[in-house]
Image (cartoon, rainbow, N blue to C red; front, side, top):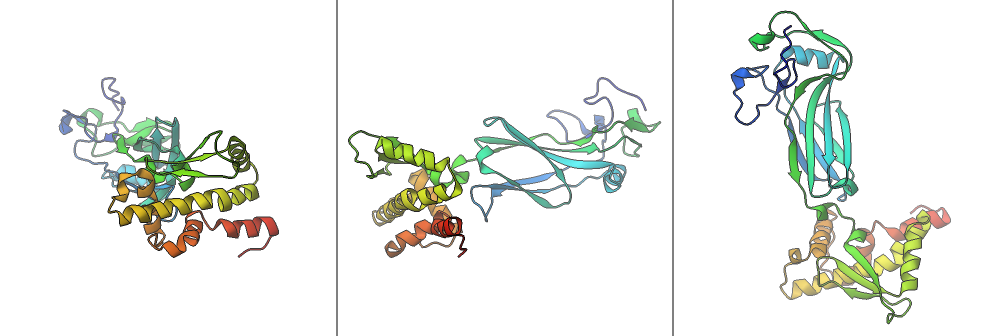
Length: 290
């Protein structure tokens, strides 16, 4: 095989064309590597995202390497805003990958490759004429096929939990135990006494039981107020998508078949949105499952 230092990899790699690049000059002029990647919200857990993937490769020799366990498809997902990168080995196609929403912000970059999982030696009838001749020998983790990274712009609000839609602040003129609700902006603001804020912070950093107690008390009442505010907005003809918090809760209600317009069901609807927090208290505190 002739090594060409002027080529992108120096040896033949199946890839898509760069802007302005002529296909006849590529390493595999008559072959394609076309991943199909789609990003969506996880319907079973809306704070997460799902990548549905599929791919096709038209080089028989590369397909044979993958089928024989000598090469594997990898999907790398990265988010520069959160300094997070993870690589997934793709076992089957089509398939899905679940991403934790806490790592996702503004933009995601998805890159798919086929790499060797051991040292390989192969040749292909679809090589560019520059590479025809002796078989190519490559060490483990060499790239065999590569696709330009695909960038997704995402709305972080689609992956926010209900609790992160609520901003707590303190004020000296608020009595201990009092909650002052403000839903006029994109995120709900709840003003509390500083001692209550400290108690909430400590509880959410403590045991699962303590977290469940906070959810069933503080957050339960706040989410009830959020639902009540949404009903008032709807009655006044205000678009719920005009505020990010109401847009997210409306979507959560739709996903969970919750009738948020039912004023008589505020408490039970809030409990369902928070993940049946009272059931968690029963289970964690008394060892009795519902």
